[in-house]
Image (cartoon, rainbow, N blue to C red; front, side, top):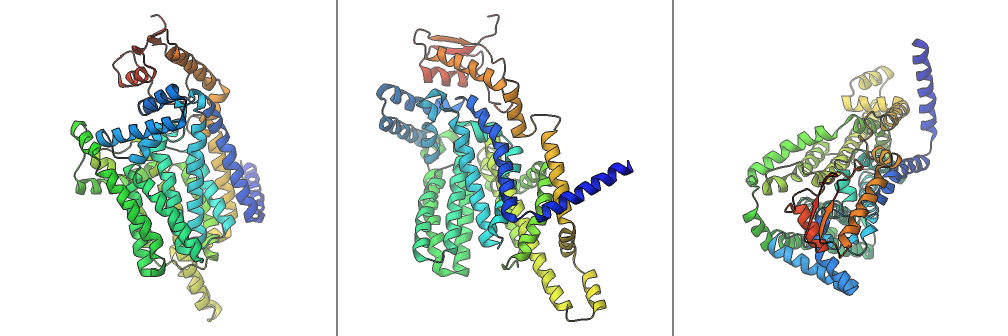
Length: 530
């Protein structure tokens, strides 16, 4: 046993030494490769993705227009007409509803493989761009180090994603939340970059981009739109205090976004839907209070051992980046409180409208905001303590050795932890990296982590079998000689494709959606014996 322990210590020591010698750019490249490799099975499984649930409800008119005319323009017009009907009769999200009607499968049924590429491409890119910009410009980290942190954050996120199907494979649900959050991340990046722009022309261009995108954000889901309103208002206040010459960069997107938000929330369809919806929400005050409670609950829920390992892995990197930073980190408590308030605010819309939290497709975007806040707040605290340590060391250097040692002995806990990271950072990173990869690859339940689950479904043939049976169903749907369609349950289905299937009841809303989409008398599920 002792020999084994010594060997592990020697191995970890050699590995930590090697990690310490890796240049920042190469480390970022390795992290990018890890992310890319982890996404391969997820995207590959998308080859067997299919149309489902609300894709049919929102796309029926576009599908009919496409079949009747073969014109993209007519299909887009039908999507806008469907959007206006929803605005008057169901919901005010005028951008989301329009995009949801333009489901790719309306034009080609086997085009569902494009959905994960679109959703991961938009969300991963926008998150990377936003996070890297904050670390580099606002917190003073170098570009390579910022890229490494964001690649590892994205790798972690896609492995522990709350609802992979609703955030990656389901067009309707992912468009409403993940795609709209992506647009918001791009908008926020444009505003933040505009506040830093040195050239007037660059600032104007970024302001125009942010102004246009903010209208799109205002017409999306209310969770993202409320988040955008809060942050843009804070950025207007920041610009007014710190740099009034740049206030237009934040003010114009805030004004156009607010107009879009009002158009969204004041839609006639919202009131009509509320009058027939059985779900009752809480009052505004109670919703806000419960939001803070749920913020704590979901932080605990989303801080899994896997997340903790990645967080610990990144700590030495963040400490080095922040220690080298020339930025001032004067308000760590205020930044932490603001991040928690922002995160908690994302629970308020569903509490107010429905009296509930935990809607999977909503949780996907809140989860990413939490991980972004976790990294940025950790970096800010490290910057705060790193600069305090340097100041204390500069003051102590003027005294004799005994006073210097006494000064260091009295260092606060945060600064002591920073010294610990400097001494053992390479070994900590190496150990956490090994444990994380071991946990990821050797997990007992192969459906725990998204990439492993996707790979499992590819290897055991679940994906292929599911897709073949789905296409057999589609052949029945498009057969004009069959008006009463009876289909069999799937014999296999990937764990990540956890959507509700059709039922034996022809009046079930899912059955009715497919029935209307393909213009059948009825569609229902039957057992093999029937």
